Amino acid sequence: MADTNYPSASTQQTRVNRNRGNKNLIIGILAAGLLGTWGYLLWDKNKSSEKLQFTQSQSTGYMTQRDSIKIMYDEAEMRLDSITGANNNLQGEKSSLQKDIEAKKSEIRKILNDKNATQSQLARARSLITELNDKISNLETEVTRLTGENQELNVANTGLKQEKSDLEQNLQTTQTEKEALIQTVDVASTFSASNIQIAPINEKNNGKEKQTTTAKRVDKLVVSFDVENRIAKSGPADMYIIVTAPNGNVISDASLGSGTLTTRTEGDRPFTSKVPVQYEQGTRKSVQFAIRQNDFQTGNYKIEVYHNGFKIGEGIRSLKKGGLFG
Image (cartoon, rainbow, N blue to C red; front, side, top):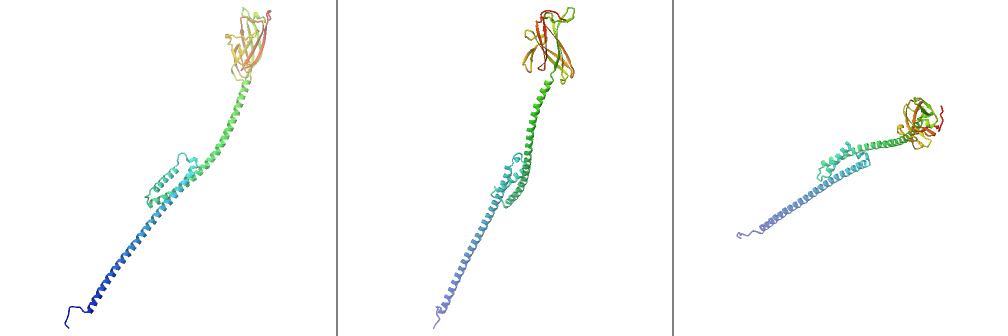
């Protein structure tokens, strides 16, 4: 049989088998590529999930750290408020310790209020809170000391108030006693008058004087007496003389220095004359003065002597209508 262009059956089968093998290879390659893509996508997804979890975990830790620092700071501030709020001694001018505490509080608050604060800044805040607590402990010790001193001062102040009250009471008692003593001394320093003499005198043309009891012959009444006091100090003293005429009127004359006297027991009384006396302590002093009138009345003339508002002596002299004695 002659040659022909048609392949033999074995050749065709070989081709079919070759084509089938190539097709299977391509399918395998495509399947492997697809599996690789899926694997990469799955791996990448897992990586992204792990990264997200790490980021979330890191954020959670960051917030937990900030919150814990905030809690630490709040506790420190409450502790500080409990110390300063209950202690009045710290309400005045701030001490250097308090100023240091305020500075640390300010820095801590600044860090906590910063939403973008770094880990380093938060660590700084934690360190400052530790220092703040140490300062608060020192302040607490200072407050305890001041409280103790304040209690001691209160006790001392109470004692001083009692002493003041006692002193005022004693002073009042002393003042009362002093006033009573002054009054006693004042009364005791009043002079006493003795040896009161009232002499009606007739003055002669030749200058001689003679006593008389006849009213119309009397030119003057000479009053004399002695005064003394053992405790009265040396110095001037005024004796007030009240001369009452027979008609009941007190003799008053400007030339005699008449006026009004306030007595201790009789109120105000008109006096005839004020006689100054220069007294020497511990001695007896004689006093004499004269009362002149143009016309003496018949009857009794009463003479009263006053010193320091008290009557210290008196005497009476009678003048008669006629007759001459002595």
